[in-house]
Length: 430
Image 1 (cartoon, helix red, strand yellow):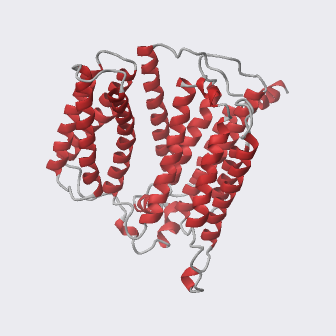
Image 2 (spheres, helix red, strand yellow):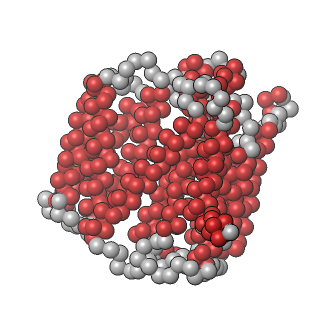
Image 3 (tube, helix red, strand yellow):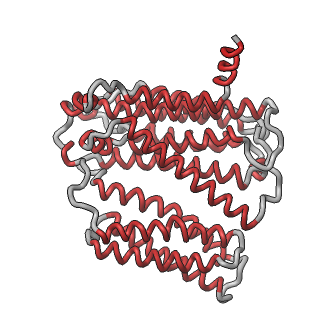
């Protein structure tokens, strides 16, 4: 009997419950494994005519492209971000990392041109990245040589360019995957862009919350409003845009193309629910103390997640992919509600670091963004033609989520190692 009570108490922990929910989602989406390849047979029978175009490229990755990828990863993922962190921490060796990253990055661009295929969106975006890299390096050289004074607008512009460099590096990676796998084509451009933009927004929110919790935890109390106020404003804006863009309200000629489908109704009313829920969240937190948080945004995440879980597509793989996205949204909402409850109850006291369970919502927000990007039509067709089951796909995307959270956490740790801990103690936002 004591064993049963102990197991019940263990399962009631928010971290364990959230992990169980996500693992159950992956297991449920996997389906039966009665025979090898059986899960793909009904999907393949319903494939559209353009499905064979989405497969792993027949042309092998040449040595020039491999060198381009390796050098750009070293420059843009290791040296340049570390140099930016060192400059922010006022470390005297930051110029070496900036210069080394610039030289290796330029060498990577050269190998990209040697590989060829320069007339595409990824290659054109590379020219923009190269110009930004040269400008950033020139500003850093002027600061290092004393041509420009530190602490002024020049140094601020360098830090802004460094932050934008991280954003554009992520965009370049996404464009590279799209180009190599030939995604976002065959008439699915709008749907593909929608998935990648919204998924990237969720991942950007997760990164921002992670950095904010670790670097500016105490300063967030100086916003004078709960964090849910700003989340509700964003939700209200996104919902308003989604309400009037999923279907054209202003042209109703009565033709067949203007008839509302079940997808039009579903996506439009998701926008309506986000706008109405965001409006309620704004009203409830407009004059509230920063510690008076509300679960309204979490409820919106849960409702949207449930809608995605029962969201039916014409392909079974697509339905499974949307199920994973919905399960991650539900996990995000539940973990955030648990966080608010535990903080409001006084369970977490003032401390130098956020409580471990507060990272759950960060991870699930990152996972929901990753699953949303991975559920676009072209990617689903690619998975079917490549004979990748949804459980393997889910584990691959979750691995990327762990890597992203680890990377951002490591950069913040590097800043603390160079500049010391933040001057103010962390205060739980409960």
